[in-house]
Length: 210
Image (tube, rainbow, N blue to C red; front, side, top):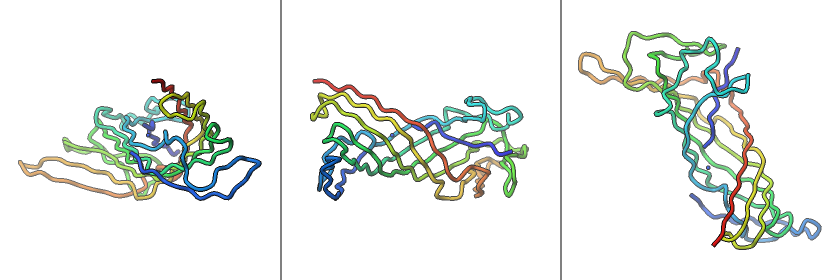
C-alpha cells in the first residue's frame, strides 16, 4: 500500500512575453503577453497529508508520520506565467511553470525506510533536533481565467483549473541530533514511495477596486 504525501499547496514574479500565431476566430493577441499575472508569485504554506479517504488526517496505522505543522512548510516560486487570450484579456487560458519545495517535519524519532515497496519507518533511540523529509517539484498550472476589466486595480478576477507537478529530485531525509555534546547530521536520499506525479484543483478569486 502506498501513501501519497501531498502538500496543501500554498502561489514574484518575472514578466514574460509569448509570440503567438494570429487567430481571429479565437481573438488571440500576437506578440507581448499583456494579461494579468495573478498566478506568478511566491507562495508560502503549511504541509499536511491528503489520504485515500479524502481526509487530511494521518492515515490509520501510520501514526509514525505525525507532523509538527509549525515546521512543515511549503514554498512555491511561480516563475513564469503565459496567458493565451481567448477573448481579449477577459477570457484567458493560463499556463506556466514554477518550483516548489516542501518540508515534512516528523514528531516521532523515526527514520523512513528506504528501498521499500510501502511507507514504513524504524523508531530510533535518538532524540532528533531536526527530523524532516524534503521534496522538490516542478509545477505547471492549466487555468481558465476570467477578468471583468482592463485595469488590474479595478477588476474582478476568477481563475479555476488544475496544477500539475513532477518530483524532479530524489527526496531527502534530513536528521540532526546530538551525541555526547557533538552535533551530528544524517542525509538519506530515496523516493520514499512518493508518487513522482501529482495534481491538484485550484481556484483564484480576487476583487480589486480603487
